Length: 95
Image (cartoon, rainbow, N blue to C red; front, side, top):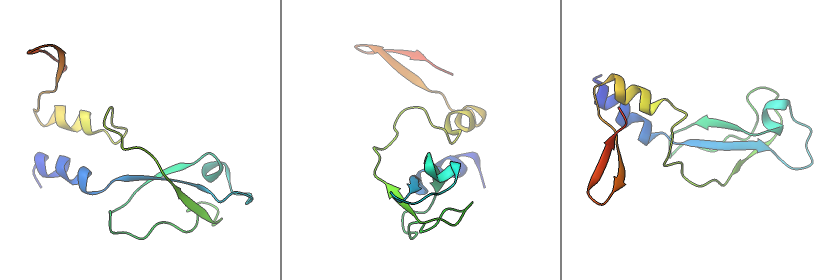
């Protein structure tokens, strides 16, 4: 698989945030919420992968800034350039 296909694959699999259902005990992971990389068509998780307690998906806004998935690092390694707009028609190279 080439670098572009690897980067594009990240967009097909979003991160979803889960946390323990209110009133349940849970473990440290699901009490504080956790991210899970899943296909858009995948069924939501029903239980915490660590403790098995019931969890629910938490509505979140899409992340269009910095990527925790390492997208910026992978794009840079593949030779892509990232530009940041600094003014009208002016851009600054980030990498």
